[in-house]
Image (cartoon, rainbow, N blue to C red):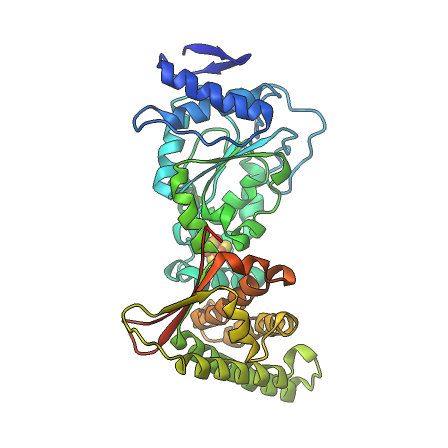
Amino acid sequence: MPVYRIRGVDVDFPFDAYDCQITYMDRVLQSLQQGNNALLESPTGTGKTLCLLCSTLAWRRTFGEFLRGGGGGGGGSQPSGSQQSGASATPLSPYPVIIYASRTHSQLRQVIKELKATSYRPKMAVLGSREQMCIHEEVSKLRGKAQNNGCHFLCKKRRCRHNNIVTEYMKSNNELGNEPFDIEDLVNIGRTKGPCPYYISRELSKSVDILFAPYNYLIDPGNRRSLTGIPWDNAVLIFDEAHNLESICADAASFDLHPNSVTSCIAKAQECIQLCSFKRSIENSADKQFDPENYAILKALLMALEKKISELVIASKELGYTKPGTYIYEFLSELNITSETSKKLIETIGSASLLLEEGNSGETKAGVKAKSTVSRLETIRDMLDIIFRGGGQNHAKYYRFHVNESRQTSGDSLQVFGSAQA
Ligand code: SF4
């Protein structure tokens, strides 16, 4: 393969590079060497992905060899000062970790295909969702938060056999990630050998040179929090096809509240009251977490919210209406939901989710039935998190409060959108 020396870095490139590719790689290396952000454009078909991969990996290798797991194939010496990560027993890299994000998984699949065409073999991992990776016969049929809750529930009780063998599998297969692989390869491993592909990818991601992930893993705070072990302060973030980024950020920071969701949450709050009363009667427990009074307050608040939404007057059914983002504080303060009271509310919703998970545990073999309504309660919690984050109202200036009439069912829908401009 041709080798190009650019800004003092030897870049292996799989083909003879065009001038525009050399220029592109030069700019990538410039920003990496100077530790600056770069916004790089190049016309379609000019091999941006290949240029990004080759130049970034060549730069990364100037620090030291790539990580290797397993029998030491092909990678050279381990960097000094490295530590062992839990299950994978591959050393953590003391060097910058490259996080390569793209919008969809099919775009990532294409990037991984391009990596295979290069001479670089960094230790890698690819992240995906449970929807793509879960192989549990019941949980794999669920979607969204219901699926996440079902998985958490089973793992907590050690009732997913696929999860139970991940650590063992990783210990005896720590060469995984030495060669480029895709989500489909992980799912095949799960189906043929048994370990959960989702948790294999999570384990692998703790100790890699390059991590491939869809945008939402970096942008959505909940997803980001779940990525433990990634040294964010020593990472290079690459957003491929970044023109999609703005709308994805706005989506991640916005919420949409439909009265039907509030109605389901009221039913769940009522269920919590009954579960608590029952729990107290058989366990004679005075545990505050299971105080029915808390859930009665939650139910009353949700009923007031439902009523308030139903009373909103919309002059134009077509357009709805829009107010500045700060209006949400006025709207909620009339229900006595403020920065102070929201903390208690968020706590109560958290314990309600636990209570409902436990309450549902006897309903099916896996105990995952009816989690979708639990997740609606969590939508309210996420909404409060967005509104009251940081305890201040500064971020509200970037938002708009929009009310419109839902076309599918009767009832107003309240939407709060993030906006790129103040
Ligand atoms: S741990 Fe089990 S339930 Fe969770 S994603 Fe893996 S296979 Fe599915």
